[in-house]
Image 1 (cartoon, helix red, strand yellow):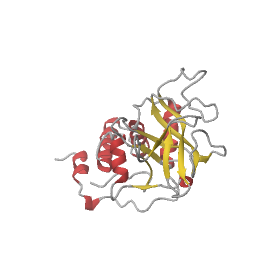
Image 2: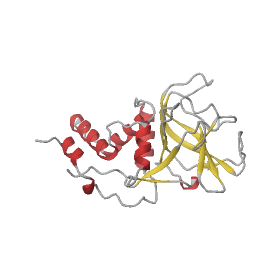
Image 3: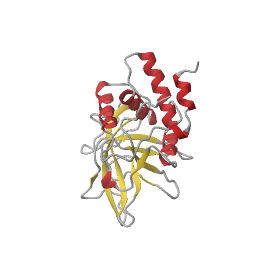
Image 4: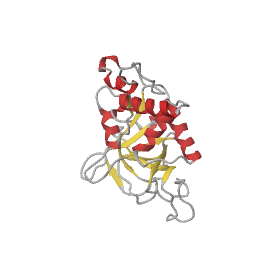
Amino acid sequence: MLSNAARFLMVSAASLVALGSAPADACSLLSAGALDFIAAGTPSGTGAVFLTGVQKEEFWFDPNPVVDASNDNANMSYYWGSTSPSSEKYYTEFTKTGAIVSLISNVSSIAAGDVLVLNKTASYGGHTVIVTGPAVQLTTPMTPVYANTTQWALPIADSTSSVHGCSTIYKDSRWTGTCTNFTAGPGTGYMRLYHDTVTGNMIGHSWSVTSGATVYWTTGNGARPFVIGRLNSCPLPTPTP
């Protein structure tokens, strides 16, 4: 007899759960779950592993650890094509036709529970964060400043070994005292987004909201493409075998 996991994996595309259109609000379970992870000191691998862990805990929890693990892996495979997707895999799934997320292009539409995914490049492994609140425009842009752009501070939760800057205003929760006193793992921080006032699209980001932080564009030499997506259903339901 096939296991539940095997059944889930064999479900045809025609029988996918109808997820409907994007909700008016982002998935609060993701943002709240991410903050709970951090508050509880739950260990997590870096990058996309954090998003995967939050989904497993918030969407498909079962008190029986054996059943819980089986359901988690089956459901992750069903929705994302992997039990532990990389940032590259999440990026691919976010951007493919028929994706289970709706992409957000306007920075003012971002809300807590959205997910930002940086794609893998030839020189960069990619990264994934969960948004914990709306982006806030910087009234005084920080260097580097570019024409026809506005800058926005984006509050996020993630798991990383690289501090999101050492600003006391846009603070990373994982450092205290000096910036060298940093504890890798889950925490909160801020990233900076660049919004094109001509096209209305987000065109770049920096790892932190600090003056002089390197800006990475979505296209061109050294680009680090990213997308921000919102789940079309929250939580993602357990598929029917």
